[in-house]
Structures are given as structure tokens and as C-alpha cells.
Amino acid sequence: MKKLIILILLLFIAIPCLAANKYILASASGTGSGDDWTNAYTTLPATLIRGDTYYVGDGTYGGYTFDDAAQGSTYITIKKATSSDHGTSTGWQTSYGDGQALFTGQLTFATSYWLFDGVTGGGPGSWETGYGFKIKRTGSGTKAIRFDSNPAYITVRHVDIENSGVDVDGTSDTIYTLGCDYVTISHCWVHNTNRTNLLINGSTNFTIEYCLISDRHNTDGIHGEHLSANGNGLNANHIYRYNIWRDAGGANTGVIVIKDSVQSGFKIYGNIFYDTNWDSGISSNGIITDSTGDSTTNVKVYNNTFLPIQSNSDHIAPPVSWDVSTDNDFKNNIVITSGYAMGGTGFTGTARSYNLYDNSTLASGETGGQYFSSGVSTLFNNPASNDYTLKIATDAGLTLGSEYDTDMVGNTRGSDGTWDRGAYEYDSGAGPSGSVSCQGISGNGYKIQ
Image 1 (cartoon, helix red, strand yellow):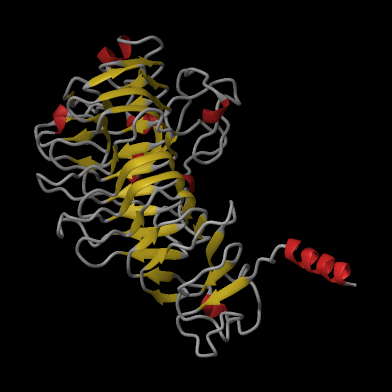
Image 2 (cartoon, helix red, strand yellow):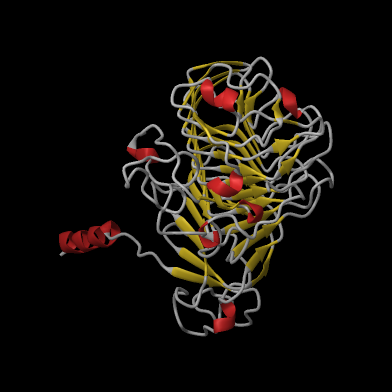
């Protein structure tokens, strides 16, 4: 009998706890157990359970530190409730899921395995709209999102991530990492920073995709780059793909700056860089660049579209500019200069080929270079409204590997026999297609006509 009891106890111990759904609603007035919408928590509880999903209804919430200890690879999911996905129907009302959950304080990820999912908004067709989650940073010196103590396996998606405003205090980055691994920022709008939108320190396997990054600090002496990747060492394995980078500047900086010691292993593809006025001095750096004295290797810049980025001196920044570099690639890109002189050294230490330019000298200086002289309105569907989908096919670009064979709206590159250059693959049946481009995104007054 004793053996039978022990066996039964062992069986119960071996059965894993079933994942549960919990509910958070700022306006809830029930018992606060979190078991349904009537009795929802009014804020995220101090302790979260591994394997559980926490549905968040519309309302305003404060900051939070996600620090529950990891248990193997079991995630905790924080998810915006919607009409189609809100867990239990007990106490549910449509008004709980038809708006936004706003977090007004810093969110800190201090442990591993988290999914923070706003569910809706972001990416092609809704770059600035429809976000289920929004983070609005307040208070000097804090961040909107901070990754601390080397956490890993974290995804943040469908979130409007806003800093306190450009030119406010110059002390706070929008997203800040103090070491992390396998982090993905996807379908987000990262913007309105008073310093740097993404300051990524000592982090590896970091992916930014389908994001709009915009609105930066532009005072001299304050880093105005959108992204600063610091101290990553060899084989950082960063991927920046299918993003729109708009309105970035500041004196003597760039849009993406890779810095501090030897840097390696960056893939930057399928992006659009446009609509930016620069402070004087930008001609010394590039749009994608490094810091003086740094050594940058193995950076692959493929199938991006670069539009004129004008400085006060009527020079434009080169697409890439390295101080000390080797083994960097620049292929299948579109570079529009609109007659401006290109500042800086540009392309040093870079193997470039099969790019399209509206500058004959640049085009003739590389294998497969294409010179396009007919103007941006001939090349793009609606450049005046920031629609940079292709109106016509480019000359055939270089066929790259399977990792790069789709554009940001899912078109397969080379499916018609020609791998096009630039961020978008030409779609002969699409016509003008603002719903899949960056139409409707306003800039700071500089437009490509």
C-alpha cells in the first residue's frame, strides 16, 4: 500500500503544471484575482508565472520590471486583448479590446524568455497606426524599454515605443540594452527620442525588423543617430531588415553607427532610408558608419533604398562610410543623390557591385553598376508621397542567398527572372501601392520630388 501511495505521488509530481490565462484591466472592480475580466488585476501583478499568458485590456498602466526567474525555455507572454483573442468571455466587453493599452513608465527586462505582444499595428500598411500596446516614456533619465543583466530570448512586437520628445533633456535613449542575446524588435514604431532611439550595448543576436524608426535629437553634442551598436565584439550577428529609417541626424554622426573596438557580423537589408535634414558636419560620416579608429568587418548591406539626405553644406552623406574596415559588402542597393555632392570618403573598405545610382560616376565605378538618369518619378511609383515601390524593373541585380530572397511585403526576389535592386522587388501587377509602402509617413519638410 505504501509503495502504491509513493507511485501515485510521483505521477503527480511528473505532471507539468498547465499554462493558464490571466487578465489585466485598469478599470476592473471585482476581486482582483486575475481569473476573468470581471475580476481582473488592475495592473501587472508583482509575480508572474512561467507558461502563463497575461491578456491586457485597454487602459493606462505604469512601468514594470520583468524579473521572474527563467525556468528552462518556458516563456511568459504579455498580450494585448482583442475582440478575436481575449481568452475567457466571462466579463468580457468589446470596449476592452478596441483601443490601446498605454504604459507610462519604463519597462525593464531583467530575465530571459518573454513575449511582449501588442498583437496589432506596425509594419507595411500601418507604420504609424493601430498599435495594441504603446509605451510613452516620462521622467528624465529613464528609458522606454531597458534590457538589463544580460537577458535572452525576448521578443517585443506591435508596440508604439515613444520617448519624451526631441530636444528635451538629451539624456535618455528610447530602447537601451546593457547586454542581451536573441532579442527581436518587430513591427514597432520607435520614435521621438531626445537622444538615441536604440542604444545597443554588448548585445548579440539582435534583430530589428518591420519597424519605423523616426524623430531624433538634433542638437550638436548629443548623439543623434537612430541606432548605436556598442562593444559587440566579433560575430555580433545583428540583423536590421525591412525597416524605414526616417528623420535622423545630429552633428558628425550617422543613422546606424557601429562603434567600439572590432565589430563584425551585421546584416542590413531591405531597408529604406529617407527624408532627413542633417546638421553641418555629416559629410564626415555615412548613413551606415563607424566611429573614428574603429575596425568594422563583415557588414553586409544588401537591397536597401537610400534617398537624398542633405546637410547644411548641400552635401549628402554616403550610404556607407568606414574608418578602418575590411570585408564589407554593398550590393543591390538603390542610391539616389539628386545632384548633390557626396561628402566623406564613402565606400572605403567596401566591395560594392550591382547597385543602381542616379550618378554616372558612381555607377561606372563598380561591376554591374546601373546608371539611371530618368528621375525618381520614373523609377518609383509615388516618391512625392514617400512610396518607393518600383514603377519599373531595374537591371538585374546579383542573386543572393535564400535569407535575402523576399522584400518587406513578401514579394519573392527574382521570381520573374530578375532580382531587382533596392528595398522592393518590382511587381508588374501591383501599380501604385501606398498600402504596402511608406505613404502617409510625414517627414521633417525635406521631400524627394
